[in-house]
Image (cartoon, rainbow, N blue to C red; front, top):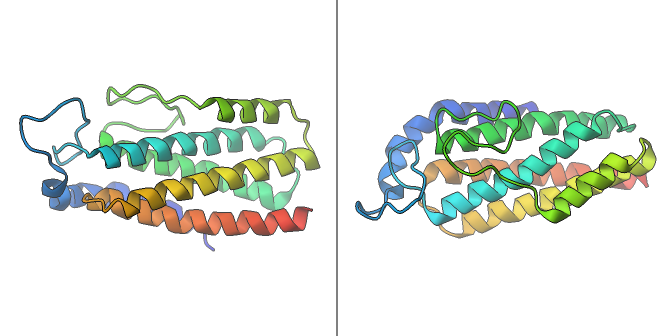
Amino acid sequence: MDRRALLGGLAAVLVVAPALAQTSGSSSTMQSGASGNMPMNRAGGQMSQADMQHMQQTMQLGMVALESSRMAMSKIRNDDLKRFANFEVQEQTTLSEVLRSMMDPGATAATGSASSQSGQPAMQMDPSARDMMQKMQNQQAGAEFDKMYLEAQLQGHRDLLQVQERYLQSNPQNREHMNVAKMARGHIREHIAMLEVMQKTMK
């Protein structure tokens, strides 16, 4: 697998998405007068609840994968796992930028922060993710750390896959969101397969 393909594909979404938003805007626009507090997409239409839930869950899980991979880079001893962590940082940063741009063209994820420029509240890690990060922080570098990081990434990717599957099974009307979810789903599956192979070789 050429993992640079995902970075290129996601980067292309940043360029193509405005056109997709124009063609799919009518299907994602709710009735006027029912604005509520839902964020607007780049076509000027409101995002559906399914769109918002998909983005928020993907970004939250992605934030955990990103921050744990950043922390792990200085501790990982296994070369294959270190390469995985390096690409994971790049991919999660790019995916977060894509999702934020779908909410707000001016928003970026350059810092990897969960805060948003679109007026949405900053995301927080759930207690289990914070506990996992703390355990990784306290674990000394070595084989045990590598195993801990790999298992955390494997579980995180399985959770991410479930998020994409649930969204795609919800019959989404927003083609922009659907295309990103399909792209993410394919690569998440490949990542899981890679992690499972590494898990077997590290035992």
